[in-house]
Length: 371
Image (cartoon, rainbow, N blue to C red; front, side, top):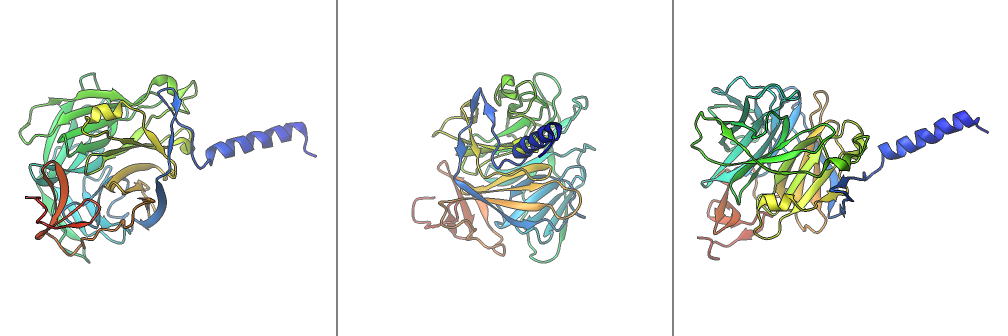
């Protein structure tokens, strides 16, 4: 029989372990326990074999020009690399010749503007909220023209300098809405609510500093409780599905990793992103925290990916697949290089040679009024 003191320690350890390793954490949001979304299943589809080329992965985005590839950006290395979902090799490495010496790249996303596919990178990390000097880097997504060896590409990107309307902030999440053609930045706050800010996309901002608009807060401070454990804070990644119907926002809870979560919002018809984010989200039930997980991106409404910013070893790539999806693989192969995400009559399609595909990969005849 254990002594009372030893028994008390054992019980406390069991309680702590059960909380630390619980499969689904309990997240409080706007005063309520979130509903669990059980539409997805999770599997590891690969591991990044390019850690020497791309350490500390902070952001990922699915390629829309060359389907089948994933773009990844490195926190402090100021470069973007393309790999496949298995992470086997780096197929293209992009470096930049004209950017300001701004490190701490924290997230990336893709989007369509004026019928061109762009990649956006948030160079806006500011852990101590003292740096300022915030940038959103953007460039037209290049086609990947090799399937075996790394292609090194040096380009001149553009960037938007911005400020917040209410002082300095640390941010680690960026997303772009193809419907509103608007960029969204989400702050990362310790033990307090995170906030969402927006800026309409434009190619004409030049060197003037733009002021973001505040959209909303993600929950309320009282959600966190006195110990800061139960609310949704420390946002590290986000993405909007290509058709604009779903939003993913994830966090990384340093206090209790088991309480890290990915939340999903469902857009109601033609409502704005700001209206959507003001409603209660759901919590992805099968989501599991990656080691220092900071990156998330949609492939389409049936599939999204996450990975880790481990700077050693081979960071795993996880694929979350909707259970009802009959096929989650692209019908477009990586060797067909003229693919492009286009918007026609308010709907998004993948254009490839003379055919159009839905965002789920279904081939659609060009005789169905797409043009």
